[in-house]
Length: 360
Image (cartoon, rainbow, N blue to C red; front, side, top):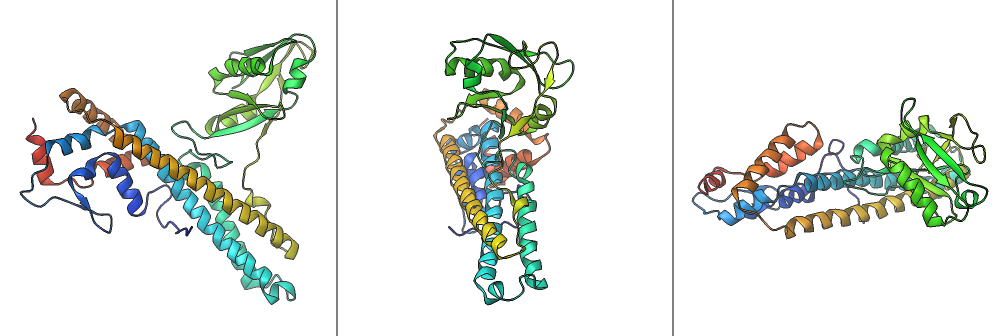
């Protein structure tokens, strides 16, 4: 796959596929045609625009679905740039290792070392912006999630199925969010199955936006939105009955975050061995990025399919609701508002407006 670097501002859609994706999702392209450059061609003067086309285009306005499309496109922009930078870094490392200079001469020659370090810093900076650049839809493992925000997974030492199924009955009380927040309690008793333990923890912590599952080793895996992660990490405390945790007072516990899939901060290029290890990590990172891109592309295609299959509504109440939703979205600052208005306004011409008015 050839990855083309994105020159657009962070999070902004680029190219024909991006601009037409949002337009088509709203059904507005039905009355016009798209040229080779992706620009909308307005109907010629006097050309009749059917009421069905206009109604179809307007009735496909769905703020939630349009948000999913925007998230997917932001994620693709981030993944495209990441893949481009990783490919460039891979080529630079391969060239250095394969060349005579990398084997025999000084590996710290200023111009080449500077170029390699610059590429490494560029990708590291891009990765650090993952959360904002992807619209909060890609987590640290590059798992894509929308409309739900990307989640941070973590574990708590000592909370595994084997430990929880052994010993006498105990009630564990969780405090999340600091002083004044209500405690969330979980009752553990001998004889509970794996599923029952996971269900009890999940039900107790769901109100504070934490979900619970178990991995193959039996460790409880907690997850919360990345936006909520800092609060959970810094305030998580547990009180027990003196069996697994001390009784009488809350005890701060450490939440161990699942490591990020890509960790460029640890990549080193000071010598041949470090560069070889870094090259291996770069190749693995590139594979992860391309795999994530495929997943996001499938999600975008599925969202577009849902739009295309939506049955258009033509009643006045629907059109009035549409206008209210559009006005509400347009009043909100940010990428979602920009993408929604751009998609809706592409291809609008005087003829189409007059045709719409004639439907009244």
